[in-house]
Image (cartoon, rainbow, N blue to C red; front, side, top):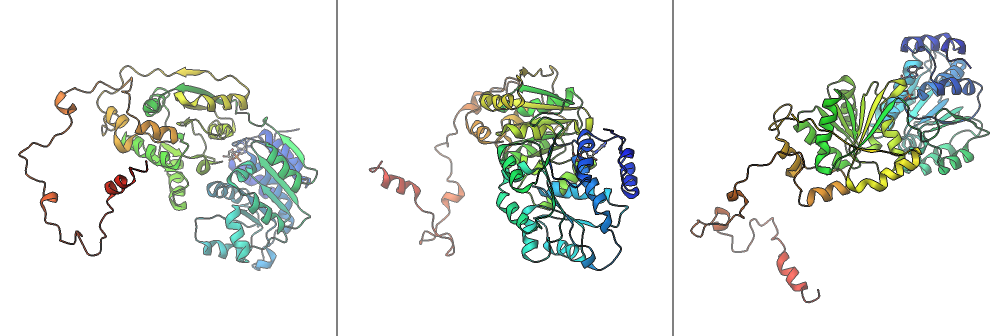
Length: 482
Ligand code: AMP
């Protein structure tokens, strides 16, 4: 087996596009999958993210579709021949962009449809006719139902990141979509992991698939240096600063387990002087694409994200990934750290482990089949005492205060609500007994204006506002029962 694209006999327009991408040799998944897909066989591919699997399936698909190439303006001459399904909008967008690059010197048309965006422009594209349709399942079903997408001439279907599609609960949607496709077709299924559910899916929808496994399932890229540092919830942001500073890291993904934690952490890091954007499921599609774009352009240094939002994103040369929260699902660890060390580059993956994360770390150990050492992170002695970076926040403020407290997940929220133990690293706050006393109103103080103001005799501030329910009275009434 050769690893040079030149020995693949790719058609000239495709070979030209590949050369333009600057690829010198095939990645292992490409070297194995491209020749098989060129023969038209079904494939079940286990490939971790960042291995070049998009080109592994799209180049041979495009090559096989070249026989349908035509310049007709009639939509009927451009039916959907290849359908590529992905679990998230960002991933669909990214794969569609790559396919468009590989197909740019052909007359094959491609487009992408995903939710969260107006259906009309997508409908117009579909009505013009496209040979390659990239889609997320939900939005594709909307277009099928609206009769914008007709799939009865599909010859190839790709189920990419299939494990995540099942995780998200797309199985019923997938089954419906597959029922619209001709029985006679080639199906390619790619998944980072081969769980029993994935094998069942493959068993139902693939015919005598060739299994391609370049990296063992659940294996992390050897180019990624992995560290697990012990850090209490209070110290985690400080640990991020420390690693960024000591390793001179310019850009990183920071993973958290919840949308709420994602937004809050992004806000806190931004206040601490780091250019940060948040990427989570509650953000509008437009906001998500903008955040991603800002990160890609280098306008943003840290992208704080949840797993669903970040799945499969391909951003070149991200030097580091932080697991601010240890993932609840060990397989997500593999996906998260797959954001760095892509296509042979080296990367750093730092996982911050708090006291209650033991079981989650043990799950990762079991999955990776190797012992994880929890290291102590050394903090700089001369870290800024008063202000950091842009001088807007004091460490103690940043670590302890109200809205900025780390509330990444259930554990984080508990930690934030619980009385805080002073951080080992926080400078001692100046003590003044006056400020530690509970506040007491001086006996001769005038009544505050809101209490002194005359209330309307009805007890209502405005006829439109109903009086508040008397909660204390209600509790009292229930006392005897309790
Ligand atoms: P993927 O796993 O498809 O998301 O690809 C990961 C990244 O590797 C993308 O940025 C591709 O442009 C890049 N890539 C794909 N194939 C090659 C190759 N043969 N040589 C170098 N980079 C590649």
